[in-house]
Length: 240
Image (cartoon, rainbow, N blue to C red; front, side, top):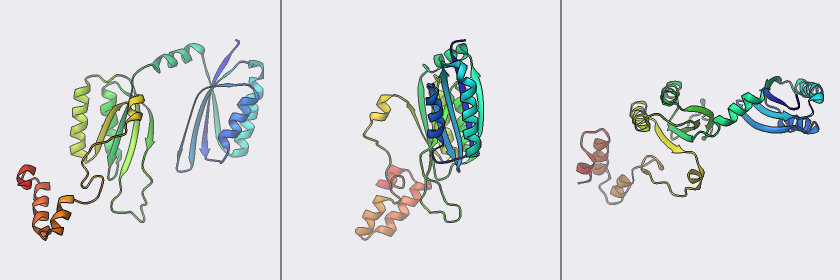
């Protein structure tokens, strides 16, 4: 066997410089990094590195050095051998289409995530990664106008995309959350213009109420706005 592919998984309390120390050891043995990913949740680290080692006669020394380093840092390590056929099959799956679903709400609950991810799985999409886009919310000192936003990176081609998007729209209404479903390509990252409802979305006020206040009819217009929001009159009627 001329080459050896190893998946290295490290978990435990995050330590400054850990990634640098591990990759320094891999570099010492001339390992080639095939894939790498890291997450940190409440100071708990999960680091994965898949690497190719050509000098297989030194693999035992490499494992020993990594193990000693992880022991000193107080983290757990696991080595998993990957066959070349398994690796090639994994690489073949990387060519599938990629999408991003962004989930936005005042808060995000486990039930909301469950319904969204079940919908995605039923349509043949697999989650590659999940990323929080907003800051953490304080429980002891919550602020009134906060948002929670997470992003799902997906792989695959959705079966019946229209039906999937219709179901997500229903969930948006029922679960009081907003969605964005986009193809993850260079054009998504190059966008510079976003058009969406501003009042009570981008800013925490209704502009028409503020304009009415300046013109001395704030109370009357605010009552009409609130009636429209409750669904008692439609928006065209409220504007009239």
